[in-house]
Image 1: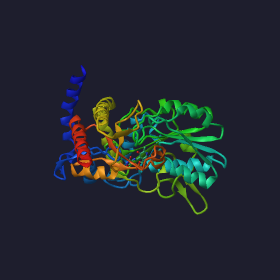
Image 2 (image 1 turned 30 degrees about the vertical axis):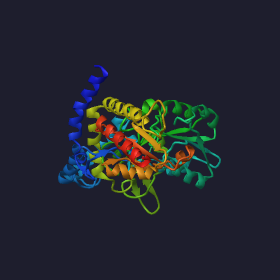
Image 3 (image 1 turned 45 degrees about the horizontal axis):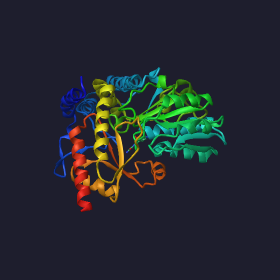
Image 4 (image 1 turned 90 degrees about the vertical axis):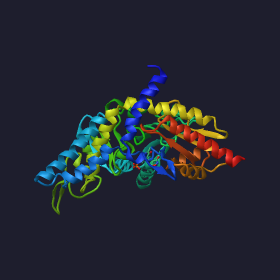
Length: 416
Ligand code: 7TS
């Protein structure tokens, strides 16, 4: 197939794919909605919405507790989601999957448990300058509590990490290396497997923030050889309030529990409490059962299309948008690394990003503006914020053309 055939084949499927997303078929401010804020949270296919309805209509009960039929059904559905999540990232065992409420909670869990148990004053944690606040603040809190040092790998102008500084920043004091797989503000994809190998050489563990990778890139935690991998269901066509934390069995077994309560114990007495086996040791209280159950349907949605097709399509959108946006007078893209997911950040000379966001919203176009929870990254580029467009499988070339036309007309009006 040549490029044009490929495009038209994808566009044919796109009609079918878009038909599965009811939310997309509405007008916002009198204009057809163009949803380009997928890095913040993407939309849900009918199958996921129906899975939630089905669960509450037929199967709901509390899990792991009752012997009655509904409790068994709910438990089975919940545990099937765990298995599906494990398979999705090629974990060696389903027990290595912990459900949290999001990527943020996953990283906080590692800091609170692994960090508290294994790190001592003088130890170092290494991150990069492109991290989301979720992969900065939990480590800062741990550093403050335990007298540790947070080290930061610098960035190049194009939005890549200056990886040639890695070896000099790693030492036997480095205990945790925590890096984003794909940046939410720049789109940059980081070479996680190579970083893992380097971290392990000095005896550090490797944590990966996979929030922006899970819906787009093939993830194989065994091949990456990372120790932890955290991601969020709501950024991969699934419900909000579900996070997935993968951890290698040996660490999860050695780590103390995260929170205390029901489910995470074997036996409780006032003298002594014994903790449950993994993964239950890390899931105190009644979890977000319905959303976890429907998360499996989101995985099936992604697998049904295939990561390869998703990535090809989003790469097409990325290439087209990058080219067309570059033609707009005064537009400066922020983050032009050669390997990127479908995220484009930019600033427009003389126009505040918030104003642009409001003007685009008036035209039915949803983008994110601001610092995108990456303030240190913005500071590094001397910016307060950017406009960010981010793609999902349901976005089209026509939507990008409308975005570009809208930006051109805004620029023309404001500069005339
Ligand atoms: N890490 C990265 C790279 C992210 O992009 C986000 C959310 C998180 C962690 C936190 O995920 P959560 O599900 O726990 O909230 N990113 C964004 C964003 O770019 N715009 O809104 C949320």
